[in-house]
Image 1 (cartoon, rainbow, N blue to C red):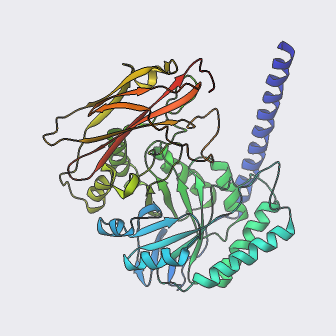
Image 2: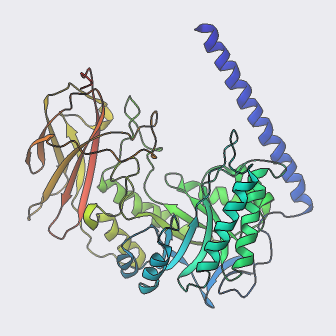
Image 3: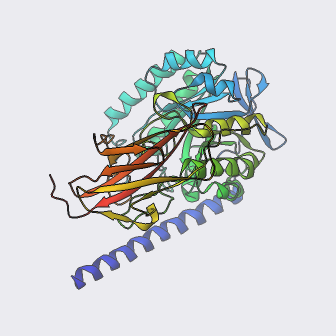
Length: 459
């Protein structure tokens, strides 16, 4: 065991040293190139497409149908009417399923649409882009898609891939060549709309590689959450190396499940809706709207309801389309008003008298008390719903791609408002208890607590 451990350490050290060497070589070469020619997105943006970017004295400006346009909206797939009503003007959608219906609905609600074109992620060990036949099929599909929807009035621009982990290379590899061929196809088929891509907020060297090898991209989207305070320095770093470039925040919001504290077994601890509201307001006021002149706008994540790590983590809507308090918060922020907002005041949940940071361990098949703590009294009663699920929001285990866990029926024995009794499952493993609170105006707050059932019978 000691020898194996030593081997693993040596292997890891060599791998890290090799990666560092690659970064240093790339960075040095890139810097030397920049001394002679400003690479990447330092190009002439002035053109007359229906959607285009102008370089106006060193500051980039997005235009749509001849008018300046600032992206202010959300990433998601539903509730277009609400988005338009509270001040949003753009929706980003992540796939092309039912795209005609999506574009029509957006047009009806005066929303522009950023259309993602999904691509297989880049993988150093196995590349989907080495197979030329697959590349040809992919190019044909993209060409057909663009030709079909290029004239729709709701289209803002095309987003080619999401978080593709652009490789750090001095010379183009199979992925880079295929990626650039797709950019050329979209530009050729649709000269009226831009082509961008969305990248992770971190990874400065990766972005330099993208600017070096894919200069025909028109703009870059940053997906960034807890690290949003670092976006100005990241943009400045890339601008120094490649010249100024237009960008927008393609996803922003609360801390991601990869950024929060975890239990001892690795389950991510989700902030309560009260904490989420605080984060949204702080990040919008102090970071999102103060990121620099060349930022073309921003999109909050996620406008709708879906399971990602948990049933509630990023969602601006609860099940059955009910609004969370965060929708009201965005209305306040986008309209620049300090209106009275719904405030359920949900602070935290206790399970067996403990909070999530205590890494709660429970015995199988036992009655356990859960209770909610609020920071205010409600004159009108709150409707409270409790649900129990197996938990997969675990950084050490299966990630977000898993199927949605099924609710454990009949687990809630009694529900008396802010307290509940539930029976712990008999099978050993991680679980998560959810609570949903709905006020008299129909707004929903939520929180959940992970716990682990120990020494179950695996029934």
